[in-house]
Amino acid sequence: MIRPSLNDLAAFAAVASHRSFRRAADLMGVSRSALSHAIIGLEGKLGVRLFNRTTRSVSLTQAGARLLARLDPILQDLDQALDTLSDERGTPSGTLRINANKSGARILLAGVVPRFLDLNPDVELDLVSEGRLVDIVEQGFDAGVRLLEAVPRDMVAVKFGGNVRFIAVAAPPYLEGKATPKTPDDLQAHRCIRQRLPSGKRYRWEFAKRGAEIAVDVPGILTLDDNDLLVQAAVAGRGIAYVPEHFARPFLKSGELVTLLDDWCPQTPGLALYYPRSRHVPSPLRAFIDVLKQWDGNR
Image (cartoon, rainbow, N blue to C red; front, top):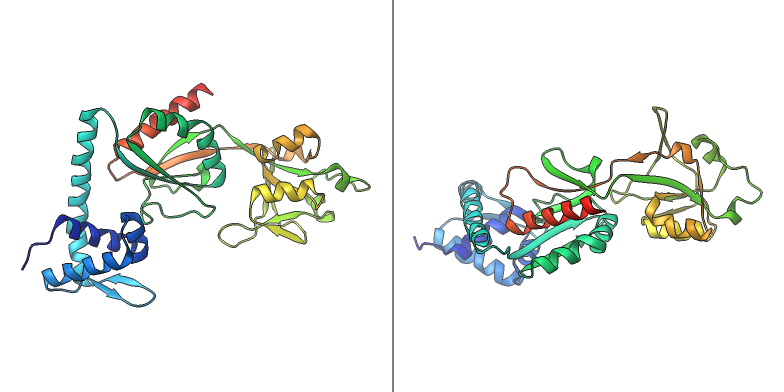
């Protein structure tokens, strides 16, 4: 048997972890065809088939699963050993990949990212903004950013940015001639701008007051999937929207929007950066967390 190279094994581990040649190729910065040829060459060297491939899916064979179980901790140890060199050099290097929702990405870009990049010029930051909650390990991210309540329990969470308050807002022209809602149930008599979650489900507006909690499936003829668009529609008089306060704040200051049901809209735990508890924390991520904590403490 011809002994495979480290690059061959790393390619195998990438495809095995993501169950996708396309995704693994994107993360490794190579073409899909080059990665496919590397895996075929590795299987030829080992004399066994490592993957079952169809046009729609990629899965490990029994031999592939056994190899991954033995190889994964070895590659993690290798990453940790190389990362130790960065520590000794005193400057983190490499690529840091973070998956964040739009709100989190906006906050990080406003204060944390510029400071981090200035302090760590040898680190390449790949910040991906998307609405859906992804498996950061499976997708090849070092960390994620979501509301604290949405962080998986097996992750380490670093809270930042303070609490978040969702508020109901509407344009004064929309409210003319209509009864102002006093309770969440009063929304049934109004036209609301509903929100579609990344999962495809429609969001039920959640309110709380003096320990009482209520989730309302509000009526409406317009459904959107982005907080900025919800605010724009509310400003245009399309109805009542329910959004994080910071999205609506400029329009509240200008008077284009007003708040409703204030006493039913308490603050909730805000955003958190999170990462796997069981894995070695690479030096770029440790440096990012340090900057994040310092920025949050100075706000």
